Image (cartoon, rainbow, N blue to C red; front, side, top):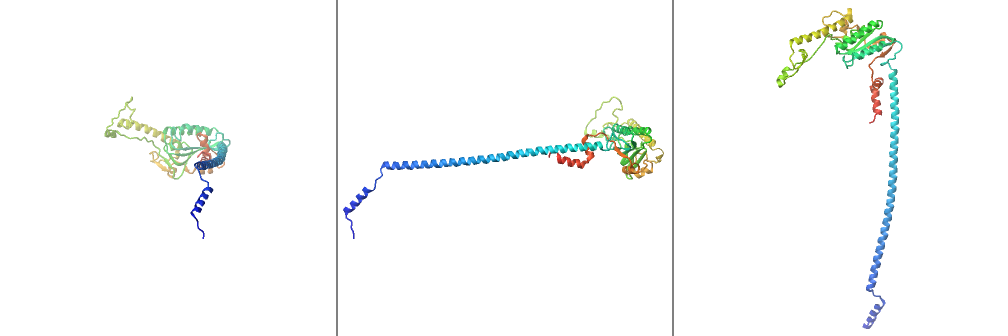
Length: 365
């Protein structure tokens, strides 16, 4: 058993004190400075590393953006190139179709002014009659002259589908046809009625050598009409007074806002009667002995095709194509129409459906 004395304890304590070094204030400052320097150095290392990483990231990002920019630029260039080629080919197609259209128009039998050889001239008369209307005497007479200017004409067919219109233009065309008949007695003139040959339409038709109708065609209406209204009582009710100044007592006799005087009505009726007599004379002169003595012929009545043939207003039942096949199957058919713009001719040559497809395909969306 061992025991420690007090002296030994003191020695041991003194020995330990001598063996372990003591930290002074200077040593503690040095340690702190060393730690601080190490921390700052670590911070600099980390910061430098981060800057290096950021630089690498920026380089990679710039490289990526540069690649993307190149791809987009090439895409835009390719689209522009494709669009240029598309425009080029569309232009080629457009020129091609225009060339074909002009060729067909030039070669077609529509409005052919350079007809050679024997042919049947066809002149469509469709629509209202009058100045600026589909059947305008100024245009029709020129077309008649064009048709008869060719020595190869063997017959003239007027395709009639008209409800009438101006008695003046109707009379002018009637007289022109009569003149052609006298100048070219060997060239027959036929009228083929489709839906209508009424009023002025029949006025013109009566000049032909023959009139053919469909059994359901409407023919006749040999009369003259002038329509209007009177609104004098209406003006009184709404409190409006009409003011009109004229030089000549009959200048405003058809004014609807003035009462019609009996004398003015008689004068206007005399004008209509005179025009009606001109119409009747033209029909009798054109139809001759073929016209039957029917009480309603000159009353403005309208007759079916069958009835028209029965009373002598028409010569028989036939259609345009049947007439051609029966009488002129060995001849060319040449249409004489008023001059049209190039695009209108192309439209008529190819048909509305072809033009519609063409426009959808090649015009910009």
